[in-house]
Each structure stands twice: as C-alpha cells, then as structure tokens.
Length: 246
Image 1: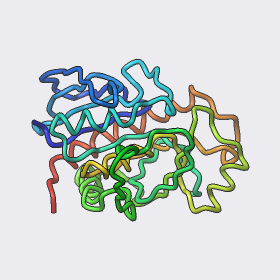
Image 2: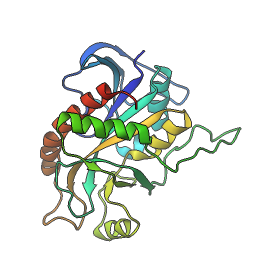
Image 3: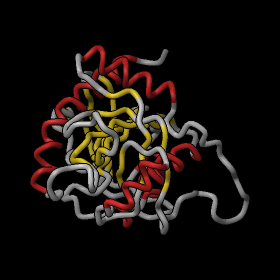
C-alpha cells in the first residue's frame, strides 16, 4: 500500500500527472470521505490522492467530514500526508500564487468534529508542532531540488468559512501572529496527529486577505492565481516524494 497521500484542496480537485492505478470507495465508522481514494504514482512513487472538497468542489469547508477523510487514508495504509490548500496572504511580502510551507496553526473554527476521542477514553496529543518537522523538511528539500521558490514557515489561521473574513478579523489575526488565512488546516492536522500520521502542507496564496488588497476578492482572481501556483506545488510534491526521509 502507498505510505503517502496528497489531500488536494481548492484548485487541486484532481491531480494532473498522477498515473492512476486504481480507485476505491471507502467508508468508515465516521462516515464516508469526501471522495473515492485514487491510487497511483507520481514519479514512480506510490501515492493516494483525496479531493478534500470532492471532485466537483461541492463540499464547503465547515461541512467536510475530516474524521472520515483521515480515517479512510489511515485504513488504506497511509503513514504521511502532504496537504495542499488555498490561502489568503496576510503578511507583507506574500504575493498571489506564492507557495508557503507553514509551520504553525491558530485555530478559529467553532463547530467541527475535531477529535476521534470524543467518547470513552480521553486522549490528549501534543500539538506543539502541528506540522511534522521532518515532513516539512522533505517539502523544503523538494522545492530546492525542483527549483521552486517557497516561503519557509508561516502561521496558518483557520477560520470557519465558507465566507471570507472581514478586514477587522484579519487585523485581529495579524495581531495574533497569523501570516496566512484559510479554512481547512484544522481539524485535519490534529486528526492526523491523533492517528500517528505525519502531516505537512503546501499552501498557495490565492489572494490578499481582506483589507490587504486594493480590490474586492473575486473567485475569478482566486482561480487564476491558483492555476499558476499549483503547477509549482506539483513539482514540489514530486520532488518531496522522491527526497525520502533524512
């Protein structure tokens, strides 16, 4: 079974270049994942691909069954997850289509099922480093090998969605230390940690966060920026898969 998975977000509902070897519809005790698991190879390395929002991008961030997604990947033998996400840029110096390998998370979500341990035995997991440092290093080495410029480090503030944030909310997030804003890193990262899976992410800046740009945020702008950024992400992932541990 492939030990690695890629979870694709907005702009990566399918994976161009994935040599598909099979597809499996999964179910778990927490329900069905967002989409069938797609098995294949990237650069000769086995991988499982899962579309976080579904192949038709019809599952809103707050309605994603994160527990089913992570459990289905674990049941399929996955040990490490490369997550891909579209984000808004808060910090100066982040331009649209830039790629960031974040290192920290601030969770502002409110209504999501965020643990596998909500009944019976209470289990606490260490989330000091929400992104597995060794897996982050693989992405950074992959970016260097692929010749793709990335930002090493970022604090991903996770909001409930699906609406975008107000300018005042972004101001608060900046005061909290957030450099990026998105809607899907939690509880995804925490659930992976609960099941002992490595987890790291490539985030593509789709737009300036509210109050940080000169114009209103439009979906046309977002998808155009993501199309440019995702090509680089795929190169980073391919090289990261090849990099191996160490």
